[in-house]
Length: 222
Ligand SMILES: [Cu+2]
Image 1 (tube, rainbow, N blue to C red):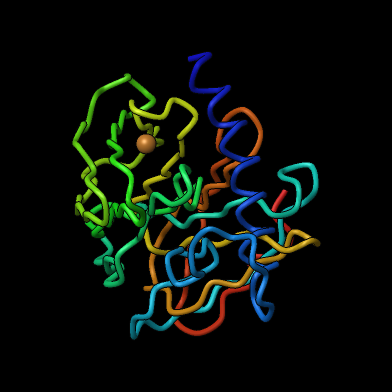
Image 2 (tube, rainbow, N blue to C red; image 1 turned 30 degrees about the vertical axis):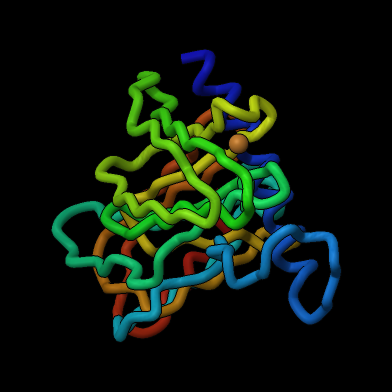
């Protein structure tokens, strides 16, 4: 589906931009971001659970460029945890912040209005243009929602047409952005079979992998 392809490309750019923003913010007190760093859910945050596998690997440059998003999606019956921390998307200075948010199915997504301006929040699933919800967002209000299906979702405000954002919902808490050399490490992963999914290019790249208790080194993924 052409619209989906275009959106995935745009989303990847947003992921990269978000990574730069998040990593750039750590340890400095830049005044440019419209919201505190605590309002974001870093894409490199792994599940804070007591699981017992650590997965390392590296994506070949032919598979994906640096700062690509990697997700481990369960391939079979694995009881993977749902992130306890909410993912937060704020409305500040007439923008959605962050402009790209990563969330998990079943995880609470908190939509906030952090300013004295009336907005609304319209969320649409990209794949089939299915409306998810469309609500008023009063000043300093808050609305919670849990996505049921993985996918890409557009977020818009009908009052301010330039306000837009994307949410990528995955079925898994095991997500990370690769480093400059394509490498990644995911900690606290439940052992089992997974589909390693790389969000880069026109369509996601999928590789079957197995996570063992302890360390699993996937090597260079071609
Ligand atoms: Cu608005």
